[in-house]
Length: 314
Image (cartoon, rainbow, N blue to C red):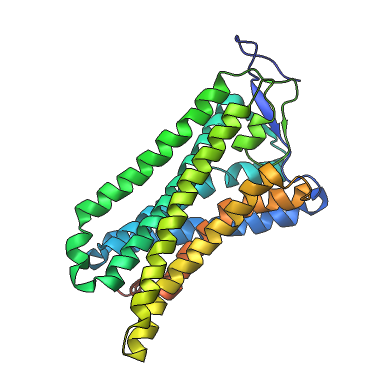
């Protein structure tokens, strides 16, 4: 079924099974995922368009939101078109290099998304705890530099994954029992000792996610302390409202992401179909929900969307 490249260690292609165990429901699942993907693409492009066109929104919170929207577009688009092709057109085969590129984009931009969420938590902390110094602390230059650091961190830490995998021999089995190429799924196909690669994967996951969650937690503890000291009930409600959307986005990303990560390594008794569904939810639900949450919870964006639908200038 498979031919080999000149190296004789790398397959030309892999076979992605899609969602094993739900073959009878694949049409309905494909339709649902297609709708979610369209909502994610339209929603995030709308957010980017609104922020780009309205110069009053060129502030740290909205610049970080733009970074989040771009990251969500990359994350969802790196997996969903191929998944829909598998479910609708039985296009199970994916090229070897395409698979490694997908591994890179998924993990690099998942790291970037985590970093952007951490940066947004810092922005909320400065905005609430140091409101008079917010614009002087988080200047446009600082926001761009922070975004660049987050991007470079993701690219540099994830690049060794693909490099190490590309230098290892593969076993005859070329079947990946899910709908996209994921680091651990590809590692299981290697005919070599993968302990170093697994260890590096754990190091990257815990160093990136652990650091970001720590900063987010500290930021919100400080925010909570500052908010509870506000004398006005209206100010208290407004401060909580400002952070509510960001907290929802954080939970929507980290809960399925951590479930998927831990299940790959420790959840051997979790049914495969549950694991695969969560693996897809982790890459599709946050990109779909983020623009909806911010569109509903953020008055400036909500007003401009309404004006756009009403045919008024934004």
